[in-house]
Length: 147
Image (tube, rainbow, N blue to C red; front, side, top):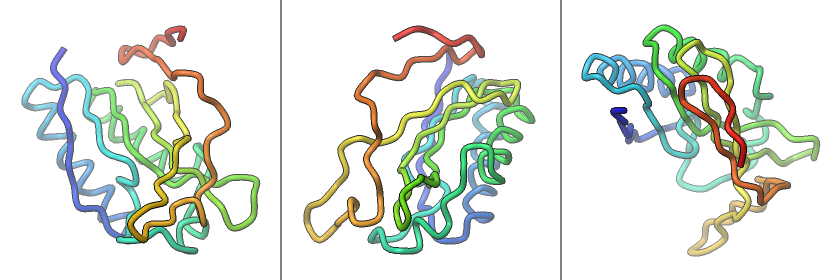
């Protein structure tokens, strides 16, 4: 298995971030990668988490994840990327990593548990910690694996 790690300087333009993810995934797939992983907040980022994060948050079946699934399917790769996921708590979102198989199916997701509240970065003000400490494990070929 060949793994590519995509580092990008995400900003507030979600469509531009998705375009960069798509370009990197295409290049990685051409180089033989079967799994491409991007960091947290790959689809939306600012220097500090603020009220815009819950405002742009979407469910895991929303447009951002549908586009990530399409990227995975189009390049026939497994893809992991950080998204801002909506939560049931007003004014808060989840910092979520979501994994898609080469067929575009969602394989798994992980909601960040330990939020970063240091050095002037108050992630927990607008981000809700994930509810589970269970490990999240999946197969990049599309099969769910047990923890």
